[in-house]
Amino acid sequence: MSQKDFNNKQAIFDLVSRFEDMCQNGKVSFLDEQSYHMLINYFQEEYLIDRALDVVDYAIAQHNFSSEFYIRKAELLIDYQREELAMGALDKAEILAPNELKIPLMRAEALASLELYDDALQILEGLKHFQDTEDLSKVFLTESLVYEAMEEYQRMYYALQASLKENIKNKEALERMWICVELSKKFRESIKLHEHILNEDPYSYLAWYNLGAAKSYYGHYEEAIEAYEYAFLINDNFELAYKDCAEICFEIQNYHKALSCYQEVLEHFEPDYYLFQRIGQCYQKLSSFAIAKTFFEKAAQLDPFNDEVFFHLGECYYKEENWAKAIRYFKHAIRIEDKREEYFSSLADAYFHLGNYDKAGPLYREATEIAPEQSGYWIKYARFLVQMNMVEQALEVIDEGEEYTGDTNLMYYRIGCLFLLNKRQDAFMLLSNALDEDFYQHNSLFDILPVLQEDTEVQAIIATYQPLH
Image (tube, rainbow, N blue to C red; front, side, top):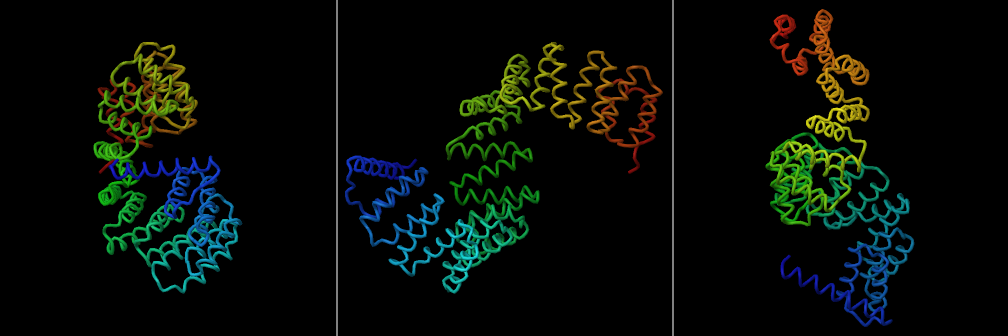
């Protein structure tokens, strides 16, 4: 924090303390308008709306010819969903400032909150004769709020588009545009609009951000990353751009770049558990398990009921072959959340490595029961049973898994079991069917029985079904 920011914060805290002391003594001395605005802003930012309303009433009593305090009161009342009272405050403000555009705009917003949409739109339609483009931009912005309240998201988009065409620097319109695009699904139009804005104003960080979000929707990830980078390079305090850029990098497995973005967030902003968790995951993916664990532990301190963090800690210890500690953290994750199949499967793997097969088997089974539609857990359970020389039981598990998934992979595991049981003729018949259905899964057969890679008859059948290129 800079010295200037520190001094400003200290001045606000001193003012709040002095105001509270005056209230306790039963008499609020005269304060200038700026002091009252600072107090209102403080209580509003702290979500102490009732206290902010008390302050604005003191301000009105001492500055009763100021329309601004009546407007502030109306704003607070609308935020507090007390729109009828807000109308009274706006009436008084209008007497003092009949030409203030903010007043009818707030009246339209209050009417929309009361679901009097036609009345709100009628007011806004009457304001569109303004020639000033900035004023007209504000009118269209308020119109977009009315359409949002009506859940008319297509019209909301066009109102925001009109607002930005009048004033491409309208920050609130740019801020609201992305949620509008998500609601209206107008991603393609959003790309064109924001490219136009950037041609006119290449330093619009919000336009770059919105462009990045739309590019991401279409899977143009490199272009999205570039747009997000422009956004936070222009405004290095734009936390959301860093985070969204990092998330895309993480999803496309560019963990070094994701880590760089997350580290920027860590340096510039207040960290939360999710930030520590994501940094830990990046180091985990890069096989830096010791560093990953330190960040997961920080995340766990901030959110001790975050099952995913304890699971990731277990994964790190698992990769380090510290099976006992892996088990401890996997079990901790399960105590918090017992409906995650990967937790049970990983715990089973750890017990397997320790040779505790009696505990591993039921855990593999539990994973299949939580996620019966995922063939991978049936395969892991069947492979475990094969390793325990329980081939018949493995076939029963494959039968059950095929009912839920229909995955050809399971058919190849069935074939492997048939070979293990010396039922070669049945295995060859089923292998022909499997190769015909899904040739490219056939390596699964060697996963359960590697020796079949040297079996000339098996290789001959595979060659017969080799697709022509």
